[in-house]
Length: 95
Image 1 (cartoon, rainbow, N blue to C red):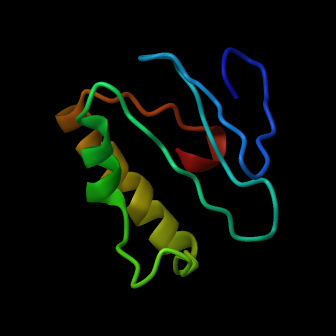
Image 2 (cartoon, one colour):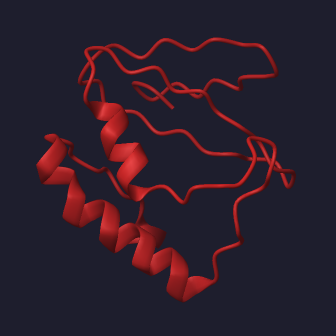
């Protein structure tokens, strides 16, 4: 969702989000999905690298998160956000 407009991206689609624009992305399906995020200028990718969980292979699905693990993930992201000059816009279920 960007500026109140929801876009549904399918395999091979490209979505451009201008720098510093409030936005959100999520997997609305019940199947695993992959997202390639290119950040310019460089630096923001380090935020994702630091909060992410390394996987053995690029096609490996991430581990499922129970409520406690999800809360820990959000807390870690919130704690790291200032380091990367990032403001997280959380929905009601994530606060």
